[in-house]
Image 1 (cartoon, rainbow, N blue to C red):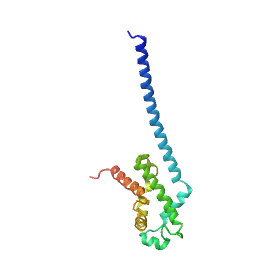
Image 2 (cartoon, rainbow, N blue to C red):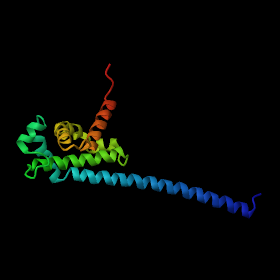
Image 3 (cartoon, rainbow, N blue to C red):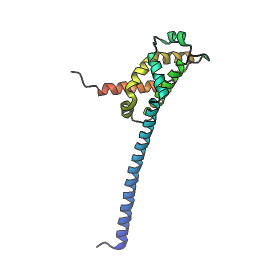
Image 4 (tube, one colour):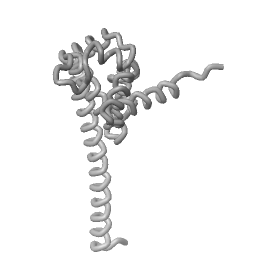
Length: 166
C-alpha cells in the first residue's frame, strides 16, 4: 500500500517530468517556427520587385572577366560607378547573408535549396570573376565569402542528390 507522502512525491515527480517534456517540445517547435519565419522573410526579400529587377539586370550582363567589366562599368569602389554595381551588391549581400545563416546552422540548407536555391550556383558562377577581381583589387580576400561558401555547399548537395551513374 502507498501512503500519502509517497503518493505526493510520485505525483510531484511525474508533474515535473511532464512539464520538462512539454517545455522541451515547445522550445523545439518555437525554434522551428522562428527558422521558418526567417526563411519566409528571406523568400519575400528574394521575391521583391527591387530584387527581381536587380537579378534581371545582372543576368543580362555579359561578364568576361573583372578587367573587361571594370572598363565598361568602372570599379566597385569608384564614386562614379555604374548602377550595375548596386544590383551586384544587392544580390551578393543577400546570398552572403544566407551563406552565413547556413554556415551557422540558423537555417537548413535543404530548405534554402528548396525555396530559393535554384539560382545560387548560376549567379555565383557569373559573379565569381568580379568578386575575385575586387578581392584582389581591394585586398579583401573574404569579400562575399559566405556567398561563395553557400554556392559550394549547394554544389556538394547537388552532387549528393544526383542518382549514381552506372
